[in-house]
Every structure is written in structure tokens, then in C-alpha cells.
Image 1 (tube, rainbow, N blue to C red):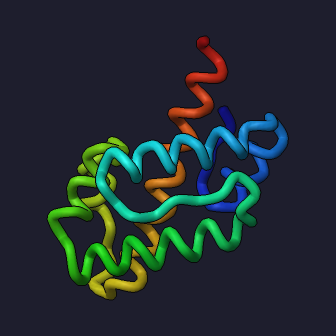
Image 2 (cartoon, rainbow, N blue to C red):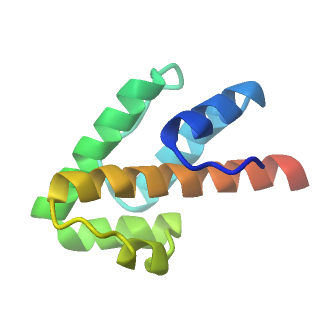
Length: 116
């Protein structure tokens, strides 16, 4: 697995390995487990995926913080990484959390692909 330090790297690597659809499937699965009413079609464009997910995370932070924390727990986003976020602007935080969520989901997909 390459070092995924930004959204574009995740998308590029998932497309190169033919795993973009599995990334969407994993994200949908975890959103459903967290009872978040959001689901992506398999053919969603990466930019739409990012924007829609970020909007949902922003909404959860603003209106349903407990659901937001539950989502992070289900996806298994590191608490340390969340604590390291430096911004006090909710929009910036939602963008950074969106990346952390997609990065963690990508790690799950990559490991499943490598070791199963």
C-alpha cells in the first residue's frame, strides 16, 4: 500500500488496483452500520463522493454529534488522529475527517484484497 497522504492518492491507487468499487461498498457498509442515511452508487465520481461525504460529516458534527462519534468508532478512525486536527473551523474539520474516513476505509479494502 502506497502512502496515502491525500484524497487523490487514495482514488488513484484504488483505481489502479481495480478496487474503487470495493471502497464504495465498504463505505456504504459502514455508513449503514452507523445508521447514517447515506449511500453511494458504485459509479459515483470521486469528486462527488468526497463532497457528499464531507457535507454529511459536516452535518453530523453540527447537528448529530453522537452519530458522528459513532460513525468514527464504526469506521475505526484513530482517536489520536482526530485529536491532532488543529482547525477550529467546522468546515475545515469536516474536510480533514472526510479524508481520515476515506483513508481508513481504503486501508480496510486494501488489506482485505491483499490477505484474503
